[in-house]
Image (cartoon, rainbow, N blue to C red; front, side, top):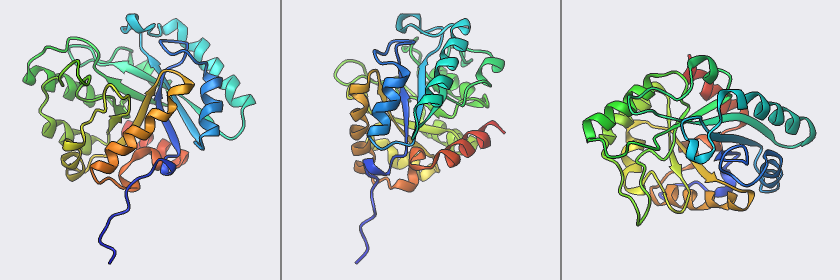
Length: 250
């Protein structure tokens, strides 16, 4: 009778977002990831290595960026059928500032902002930290928003309703991180995000070409929460994805 919604499927995804290369803590090159994603049917790929404060993960110093960006340009020049975007997973610092300056962040095609340290802050402080980061015009996506590691670390305390309201107002996407150790956001809170008007991004957090299939776990979480293709940012074309980025920055 037409009462069952059409749920998002892996084949709906056109962009592969959130992955790490050998420039930080990944094991594959930019070209290896581009070829693997093209073979999997994606039309664009967002490279998001770590920023400088994530030294434990080989975070990119400012003077590393020209070399990486030149490699992205070179891959785009010799690999047809997929567009590689210059992204970054920038750390949200304890006071809510972002790890790079505005001038540096303006050079990326898009930005994922994530918390990786000082995870024992109380809920008011952690919420304020996230909200301050979201005041910046640069984050396109908030990565693994609650920081949980399954069977290893609980989510840090956040006022998710305040976060979702800010994300909807400011046009920031919230990630379903498909790393099997994370699966964050949890499917049980995605309904609240959707009700608040938040756009959801599905990111594999892949650290090699072999782990791009993690994205299927994120799609499973989205389906469990009842999300359709229209709810997910990277079902959009490259042109529409970049329009989302521009709207956020303006």
